[in-house]
Image 1 (cartoon, rainbow, N blue to C red):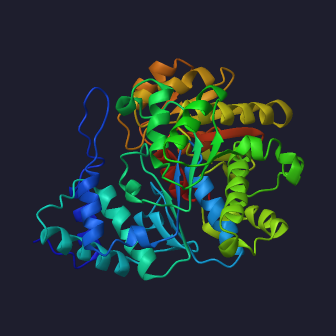
Image 2: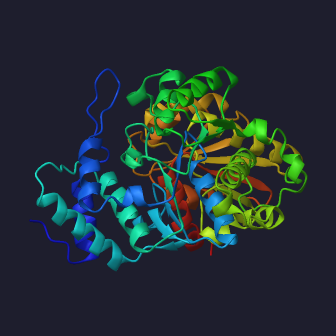
Length: 431
């Protein structure tokens, strides 16, 4: 039996597992949830003993997890969050009140999971997502959190987190075309996957979705006797809370307005559905606290300003729905304040080239790569807009520094790996 005695042993074990494990059949995937359920049961069913808010969506999952956690912490709750992927450290995935799980706790939990799996032939661990998810359930249960906020990895219905049977609330933040290699090119199939987290008698909050799929979500909820609430109907305009006119959040991307709508709707529904648990909510205090979510949760890489002269922004979004909003905000800023727009761009795969129709033609591009299947040269060719080709994020930033101007507006993004490397090397290069 494999033994985990150190954090390096744990990293080695996790890297030996696949990410993710899919059995592809007609562009659909199957995840062994039965094995995941058995693992959880043999470990005492911690997933079923927690009060869980379960979150899925194309964009906004991480932001909503952190917004909701921030609000609950401000109102006196002990909150566990499970999110993925991480920017720098795998421990970012499992936190309590914003604090990362310790290496020692991860080692202990992983060893417990391995011992249980090896002692029961019916348990087959096939991906490191399963290990992470079960570690989170165990950790939150043993640390006696009041609420666990759990983000799905991919999809919803067949994600390892979906062994949760009765969440307090399910949340679908948004729906757009993503992971089409698994779910197909139809937004309706993707919606069906996301709706898989809707559970019997547990209400669901839905964030930004097009009107033409609202009916599909309602039908999915009706099948399991779940009530569905759309955030744009509960909060048709954010100006009701004086946010839009005074947008001083430390998560300052305008796309966060949609996530704030979803967050406020979730908090409202928690109060409405479970008044005995959530009776102490203070709305004004909650709004003020949400403005410091990045600081409180150490949540980074979402429209994060890392320099003011020149203005440099990093953002992890890499799909068309989010890039469209980001480029609109960039164009608004560029038209009013800056003389040159620079975009440092890297993508993890060619499937994400659907973003190119939203990329501004008046920008200067620096193409790069980081843990990418699509190389910078291929990316430059496919995007087709003039620019410089570099082999690493560090080289891209070095090139930009040598050619920078104080009145530039710079956007770095397209991939979480690009953002992670940019944040890691920026101070070294610009110091």
